[in-house]
Structure formats: structure tokens, C-alpha cells
Amino acid sequence: MSSNLYAKFCVVFAMKNETVEKKATENTAKNKMKSDIAALQKAFEIRLIGFLKKMNAVSPDNFVEFERNNPLLAGKKIIAFLSSE
Image (cartoon, rainbow, N blue to C red):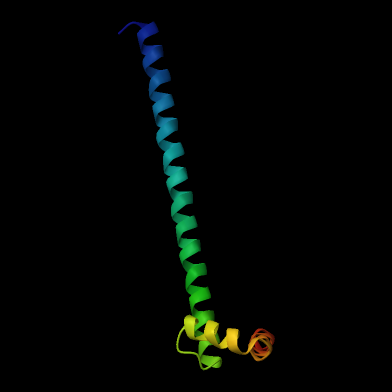
């Protein structure tokens, strides 16, 4: 293999290796972001379930209906829930 061809091979190999490393880093970052989002969603789900239990609501739709019929009372309950955390 001539030295010029060998140099080209080394450059291409280095670029390919850099691309692979970059993709691996991006995938790691994406996986971490997905994991962080899942953990955040789980935390919000737990808070929502706690909130609905405290409001004696069966479902989010049930609470929305309650809020439409009793906006002041619903607002007070929301403030009380947030203050208790």
C-alpha cells in the first residue's frame, strides 16, 4: 500500500471512528433524556394521583367537571394541595 493511499485510509478511518463515537454520545444523551423524561412523567403521575385522591375525584375528567361546577371551591382545594406539599 502506498503511503498516500495509507494516509487516505487513515483519514477515512479516523473520520468514521469519530462519527461512530459522536453517534454513541448522541445515543447516550438521548437515552439519558428519555430516562429523565420518564422519571419526570412518573413523578407527575404520582402527584396527580395524590391530588385526585385528596380531591376525592375518580378521574381527571371528574375533577374538571367538579371545577366547572364549583370554580372557587376547586381553586381553594388546589391551593390547599399545593401548600401541603
